[in-house]
Amino acid sequence: MPKPDILMTKPMLPIVQEQLDAEFTVHRLYEAADPEAMLREVGDTIRGVAMSWVEVDEAFLAKMPNLEIISSFGVGYDHIDTDACLAAKVMVTHTPDVLTEEVADTAIGLMIMTVRELGQAEAWLRDGNWTGKGGYPLTQATVQGRTLGIFGLGRIGKAIAKRAESFGLKVHYHGRSRQDGVDYPYHGSLTALAEACDTLMVVAPGGAETQHAVNAEVLSALGPDGIVINIGRGSVIDEAALAEALETGTIYGAGLDVFEEEPCTPERLMKLPRVTLLPHVGSASQATRNAMGQLVVDNLKSWFATGKPVTPVPEMG
Image (tube, rainbow, N blue to C red):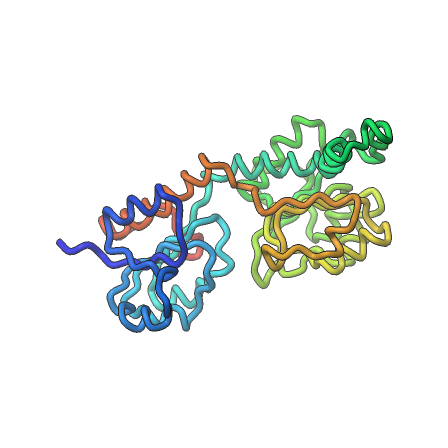
């Protein structure tokens, strides 16, 4: 039996590349001197795509008329037009669950770093200020007694909430609807959630529905003691409004692991003293990324062996 032809859009982890090479005929788009010419040449043969962050729309799908499945590396998939994939009868999979605990750990760590200014305190030490100027100034915020509002109480949101409770934080949430079996107070709007808490944890996915959902109104409702943490998608926060709120003291601080135009980070945010910034490392441990990569492989293998994927995106049923 001939091996199915698949496309790899960008380099992937060794654990992925080695297994895919063994199971499939892999066409590496990133190695082509002219990617468009390559797709014109092999597009008709491609039945699967192994991909990390690449925009998928009708034009992309049209270049591979026999495409059956897109196996995407990552839990978020707002870069994939699922409506276009459904119309083209192309299955879409992602890598949920295996990164939940890692991202939740990062979220809590980022929250503590931001509230207690731990990154700034380390820089103070490394710059020689502890011996030259004395101890780092007392932080004006504390984790103790805070109320955490979670925007997006999915798998990761619930894992964050569980950890937050162990720190003695009260937890509230907002999402598209109230969830059955969840005891945390629910708020019907993001503004109402911000009014009820002093720490806003953004775990919501990207896309048109959440674009700039955290805007000037929400930030104002959060108040001068408010801290925003974003572990979801950069597009969920209006970064210009966030910078303005921080500069004017409308809120106290922010901790961000994701940005609208990665890897570019807004200069206004870089200059602010109560902002902690991370380079999108929420799930970036070797163990977790390997598990995510294995799911990319498993989804492709399962599809071509049984016609069923392991972890389809919700829209695919």
